[in-house]
Image (cartoon, rainbow, N blue to C red; front, side, top):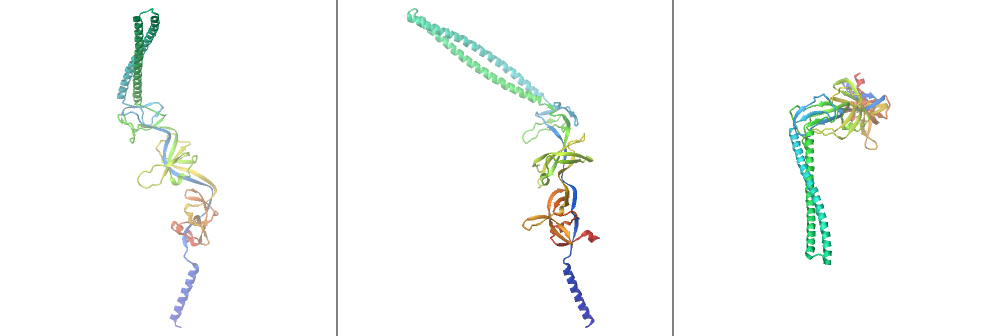
Length: 419
């Protein structure tokens, strides 16, 4: 054979040997990030939320009277007591209406008194008429008897009958006068009652020109100024809010919790609150209220729903002001001796009986083996699992690789490759 022939045979043999080696090695291994199953003595699940500091009790004070603000007796930050007059609205018109109503009451009460005297007079006249009618009837009866006995003349009998008839007519007229007088008295009484009601209404309007503190506390908001017009709220048109009084004896944090987390939040769970205004300080608290319905969504774009959660601060710092922004971490569950893996490690794969099952990819002999696990609580970026042992190496990423990874795929650890 020539030299070129030997070279060709050798090249073909080396190519065949390389093909056999490649076929034995299989496909190239996939580079992955690997972590381990960690056992923790204590593993906690928390929910994070943001909101603001609010007073436990507060009152937004409006007005029930329309007019100009003529007195403002407090400033923002002042301490006030329940029942204290905080401001006054111009009451000239209201007091004029009250004076007119009072005068009307007095006039109608005089009319009522006159009607009552008229009733009394009518009742006295009726009593006299009744007595006369009784006497006239008795005289008529006696005269009739005497006439039958022939002791009196016919003219005397007729006169007695006429007198009795006149007396009965007078009694009927007296009854009619009593009825009329009593009707007049009833009408006068109704007018007095209506006038008194108008007077009370006018008195109420006058009283509402004094703005009185409904609770004791601190003036935490005072958006109005002296001389401004105060408007009463009506349907679809809110009235003027004069000020807000807050009872700062106890403080709450009102936060908004995402709908994905709200079902884990329960009344009584402990929480830790931090304020942007006081970096480095934390405040212990406890959940006292969980909203039953989602908060209104602002804007036209689709947004995740949020729920209002109220946290009572157990030892608030004196001087905390409503409106300060805060962050809260609510402790929803705790596990002891828990096995955890990074959250992205747990994936879904088809189950033998159909459907989906949760599991992790364990690295064994250079291959990724899908191992079903049961998941538990979530804490931060980790999740509780069972079905694997502590220290077991598991694939944690990259995400694109983990999403398409299948059981038995050859893998190599990125850290080892780099080394």
